[in-house]
Figure: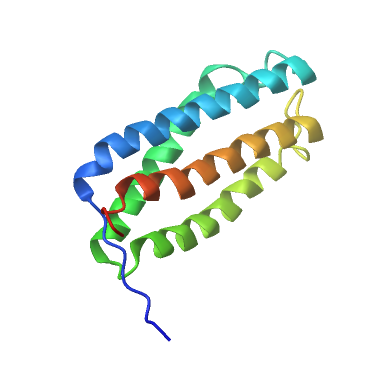
Length: 141
């Protein structure tokens, strides 16, 4: 049985890969947000579905994921696999915040709004798990 070889990362690609990952994530979130606004007609005071809070949350969250992946890449034998495991755990913890939106007493918050936020969260997580490692994996890895 062949042994699994470690995956090398090309750290020089992190700036461009990070920028592309952030851009793709923000674009995906804005598409989902726009659809949610058209379908749900949320109250104007429901901040999570207004224009700027999702952008800020996405940029900060994805930047955090990029930083964590870079750090993992410095030390892990198989950085992509390790990053995906860490990201799965963090995703489950942070997704719990979206789940609580339905139970919160925020004006305009309900199950449909929580589903919209969860959809944004899932798409960004998928982009981070697939796009970022794919862009920084060394050629031939």
